[in-house]
Length: 335
Image (cartoon, rainbow, N blue to C red):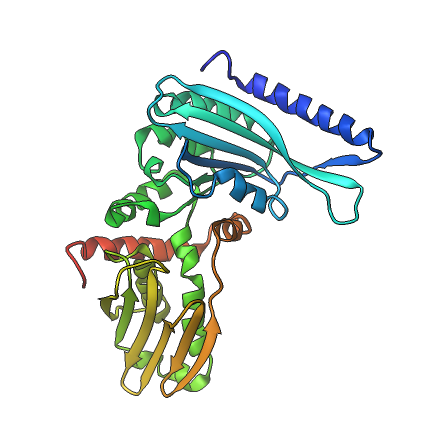
């Protein structure tokens, strides 16, 4: 590890940061409250981010205060390892207290990630959960990043960031064997699709027809079948307790949500959830239809949803395993 960057140095700088914040507030007759419920490690690229990780973390802090550690991996700068500390603070409306969360930024080259793992283990918030949010998808399956994963109680990632969706689905079971809880933001994105489908079967008459369902149809607009489609297929089969024929349909490519429609059908029953325009979604139950709204899902909202549930989700584990199996058995193309 670089002598200039060590756990002792970072912890000392954090201590000095809190002293300076307290003195500044005391001079104004106010107080500083330190808030921390976990260590959140955000691994990201060094440049080129549309929305910097620090901005997303700032949006998360009020509901999920943490010792935030932003790890920026610089791919073309061998031997680099730097750090700095600062605070994210806010003052509740009308209050005299300033609530602050500490943040550590570490910039490291990929060849230094082994040293980073040792550094991180020395600056975790004591006795609190550790969440690793891998925002740079390319890091997730690289050997250099693996020493960091054992630190995590929960690992959050986004499979949509991979050029080869089958590659990440193939690697997820290995990640699960690290012992941490897995959370793919692609699964989080399709939660509301699952909820809409489940609500379509809220009446006893429709629940009685579940046994008649024969086909699942999923329409998407990405160049290849998106991970969310595999998650939906796996969830439907788990809910039914049996296999079902599936038909994937490719809509026009372009911006917008990957999933455009999910439909279930069989003799005497048809249920579909389809995006129409903007945030509007149409739910059809046989000849009846109703409109619902799928509000935009900003990144901080998706990550925040996962930070609210740090324990393992048995349903997600089942669906993940089934989705990986389905994707691999249909690797050559649409089923």
